[in-house]
Length: 209
Image: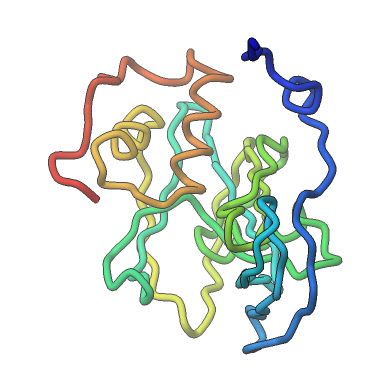
């Protein structure tokens, strides 16, 4: 008897039926930002189990602002959950039903004071698909005009203006750990390599993150 290592049709096409069965579902916790649900499930192997899901009430939205000299803007703030300071591209949350682009324009102006004439969507992604359904949208903003910040009461933000290549180096050496920022800058580097000066791609964080 022989076996084949040839991928199945569903593996080849990326199409598959859901092998999970939901037996029951109950809410565990909810606030204005998240909802946690626990499902009783039958897993793909046929066993009984539980699956906790975190539903975000907002969609994640991020912006890479790029000026005519191929500099960008990072915002720095202390992240309560991580208990550490974090440098990131401007980010925010769009309530379900709001156009993420409208949110991107608002967040860019609130956090940096910038407005942009030209917008392009770079990415649509899921941020941690084993536990949450949170979706993210990333935009490139160009044709920048400087205005005034309009920070929320809970925001204590610093703004840094720097070359795109330096922001990418911060991703590679571990100074930036925010997933949306890293993914977005790497996507832009692949799409517009001419905007980035030479970056040593062998750089790795000195210590595990």
